[in-house]
Length: 442
Image (cartoon, rainbow, N blue to C red; front, side, top):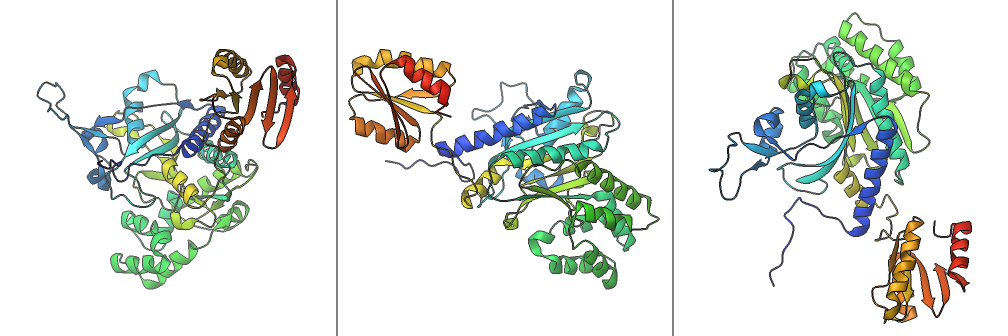
């Protein structure tokens, strides 16, 4: 037989992996909604003209054509699969501006597609989980702290066996620091600084000296200043010692101090910390203020698993309004791939059931189905054995493999098992009373 495989870069999950992915999506949605964010879905396909505005990404866009041609279609513009959720959001806000209530706070979990070379941890089809706030004319700085808090709470609620560190910086601060050291080519400098974690500071130094008209002493001084990370309290002390006449520099420092002040009293319960990281640049040119990158402690080799920042007006191509925003994006498929490779979680059982009901006479299936229905009414996910001819031992082994509780019915008796623990009941009522009182299945 011909072996059929999925195309390279288009992953699919085993049941327990899919259940874990759904758990993360549920946590993400729940936390976002607890802050008043609303869900959004946009079409997988956008017009190519809408998408092709992000520089180097253009070569990675998947375009769409019908197998039988388009001669019968009125669509004259080329279409393509979205490569992120940010550009569709900008288009959406511009298109529906008069119908939205601002600030518009949305979260979105959908697949995106990129035609890049498939490799470990890099996919052609993958999920992104985004949160953004877009305001009409003016966006208060407390939202820069809010989106960071939401991400911190999401990671705090998701059972990764490693700590998460959210690095925060500000592009105005970084631009001012570059100007203070004689650098005026911000675009090249920021994109180069953004590579520090990938190629190392020494290589970044070589690139800056080669391409920028800056003295060696200035480059060394700049790289020294951005080389150290600071806890928020220490960052505040350090930033307050800086004196400068550059207005952008001063504005960036003030914004950082304001965001840190909002964050200091609202740290999540466990596993997540915030730090000030002066070298975080986020090389994309549309970021204008706060920027973020998120790393798993000890696994920084994988790069950032969540990043984003503040932007002045991403919707300007679609509407003549000033609509500033701030947001963060989690590369969900990539995160789950790291979790799998590094065994960072205890995977759930490969089932959505909590209880399996077994029995030894197929003619009893109607009665068993009625009992299963009662359990489901109690909120207990229940399934029945698929073949009643299986022996008791074989049915119990099947329940153990599924890692669910096992209830075996035999001549009016109910034998109830959770792992090695066993309870026997002679009436249906006594069994339900036990479960109600002991909450045994939870």
